[in-house]
Image (tube, rainbow, N blue to C red; front, side, top):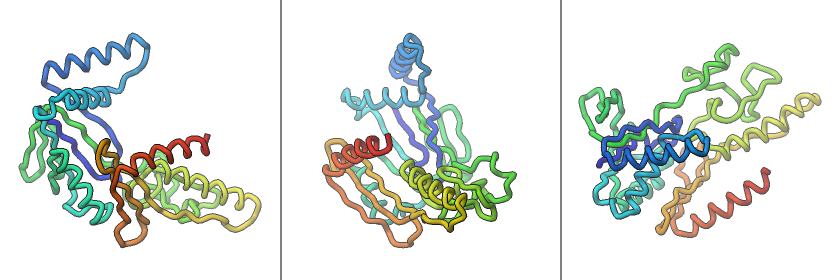
Length: 258
């Protein structure tokens, strides 16, 4: 079985799992999982169910029968920075995961993906991450870029529009679009909107920093901190400590934002 993950990039992309499976044993397990959801009246997420089955096969000692390949349209230098790219590549190699750079997908068929140059990769299971663009709903305001993202300044106010603020996935900031960034943008926008209503100048400025942990259960997880608006690479740390730290921080975040 070959599992193909298209789109390793964390920037300007929306996670969407599009899956095609041929192996009968995998299909049977997925059908059983979907039936259990139906019995409970829960709407299933097909992509996540297939991913769970793939992981189950790996945990059951089937890893040698599964070839996992990640393809990305970018070159070998990660947008997260050179140091982070090296660490991520090493982590993938340690788990026998193949990484193919500069493989922009142009065509997807039932069991293969192709580039415009004719390169191809066959698969049994495909997880596809298509390009992420701005919402067309905001196009009427006249303050969007060529991809449909809303143009805002560091106060989160829409350019050339008083009293209109935007946050989250819809704004034109470079780099990844993450939940903690959207929350911080919302806090900045709320403070400045109140100030504007009260006739005061903006009181908050957004700092576009990325913090993430790439977990490797039982191994060295990767922690990355980067100021996206600066040219230098982000700081990278590795070790099992970061898995523990992530879960502690998650519990703190949920408590403080409840």
